[in-house]
Image (cartoon, rainbow, N blue to C red; front, top):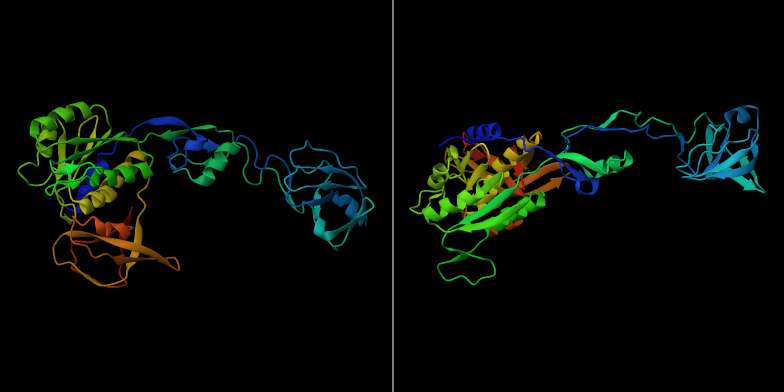
Length: 393
């Protein structure tokens, strides 16, 4: 067995470059940008009024003018007009500031009667209430750097520079494979010796939330059948996620079957609970995660290990979250313990409350969990108030 730290190093080294693809800006949220996004013109592209009101020339103000005949209106979206000196023009928020104008005075500071505007404030300044051309970004400036996960706000930037399609890192094509003679579909009534499938649909949900394409398969616990099914899947997908068949049982054939098909074993078993039997391997075409069959083990290994591999493959930095333990925990074994926790945010501090379950087969206990707190193997007692790493779903 290897440590959690060793397993993560191995997985990071086995990350792959899946290439890139063009997607519509409407489908880009959450994807990883594979190009720099640059300003195609100044931002804003013109001197822009930031208030509804009138615009004047500061030169007129400096001559002592405080009342201005109103000639014309400048609306947002209309071509720029020219202000006649000695007068004012009404201007709306977002409109281009008329030529010759360099002051915008808001309606709240005016009295307008009979097409004459009287200013009711004592002082104005050049470019008052004007958003200057190019002050947000000049043409050619990088607005979003390559390698960033695209946010909702980034989509607004993409559309503002005319990027209707954008280059992003490809996501892996995944096969989710359940194994086990005891499993039946969720819509079937199980016999007393059977259980409904749950692990693969947990993985289904996790992958779907990350917009990763996948297909679902099932293989019975027969070595030759497993080998035949693997032959069909190994060349079709970037990642295989197998649920079950990797422990020490007499029908746990997955490691043997994978090795017979040229998949190199990078490790099998980690000094951790839950998820000790995790199997990980690859060849030049495919990466394989053999998750243990117990539900808590599956989601723990997905969250800690597959997420690490995915972030590395997409060129993303692995973000590390920490939370404060809300109660004492004693874990005497020399294993890393991933305890599932509920997370609350109290005045900006994440608090992690351990959830008591009945081992790695206790699927029900995951219902109120938000992630796993990682308790290091070199420590047995963990005190309330300690700050430790958490892996969020």
